[in-house]
Amino acid sequence: MQSNLPEHTAGEILAVSIIIPMRNEQKYIASCLDSLLANGFPEEQYEILVADGESEDASRDVVLAKAAAHPSIRLLHNSGRFVPSGMNLAIRQARGRYIIRVDAHCEYPPDYIQNCIAELERTGAGNVGGRCLTRPGSGTPMAKAIALFTQTRVGVGNAAYRLGEGDRYVDTVPFGAFPREVFDRVGLYREDLVRNQDFELNARIRGAGYGIYLSSKISSVYYNSGTFRKFMRQAWMNGIWAPRMWFRYRGSFCWRHAAPLGFTGGLLSSMLLGLLWRPALWAGLTGLGVYLAVTLVTAVSIGARNGWKLAPCVALIMPSYHFLYGLGTLLGLGLSDDTKAPVRSPSVKVREQP
Image (cartoon, helix red, strand yellow):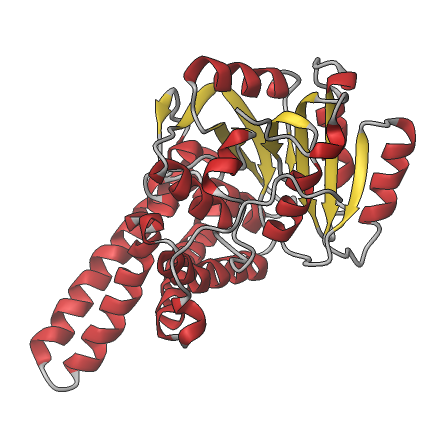
């Protein structure tokens, strides 16, 4: 079998390449790098490739300062700016037998690299990952409420990696660790997906017969959106890009991603239809009443465990998030031919030299 490492890496193959797509991450990138450097894995056996998407803050300076002290860190210029182009740029230059994709918003425990490699070798999976422990992006009650809401079943559906589940095969994991040959088999990240590119890639990995394994031995700490506005923008953008992902690879459809569409679409259609047919209006109001009751229970439950000042925040976050996500999905479905690109995998160019 022909080697799937780039030709220019002959004689200098490493165990693992850690890739960090980054843009305007001045607040988090130093802590992210420090946590990776603190891993017990021998530094001469790994490299850290930071693909910078033309940051407008001091992110690049922070990385360059770290690289001056640690030759394992390399800063790459991602002219495409977004995550998938940064990942593809780094994968093509990576020298590792394994690829670990990490997020600049995260911090990683001292055994993260070792456990990722060990679980890949033990399971033979195409991607492994672990629980994502969400922490507030700031010290405000709203930021704390956002972090707690995104770890509830009503907030994230059956996303096992957010609910504390583990040691089983799932549809996706956060970020992920891959044997390099997986990219030779299924292709690289889709650069026409600004959002949801991780889930789409994992759908292709599953479609190729590989497993996606969620391990209880792997975890990361993720700092969520620190403001209500940023979290709502995240909901809106995720909603818009969900249908684009579905059109590009039908195997990426997931009911938990479509659930907000059912909520928003059902509410709007019942209100409009109710103008002509009263029973539809009452059905919509009944469904809305049930939803608001669930919202109240969720807000009270989180408030009782974590402080009552968080309850009003959750009561605002939950319907706003689901409605905007669903509205974004509705808009994404209605967008023009751009969303209906041919269903195909990206070409594989792993051997391309920098």
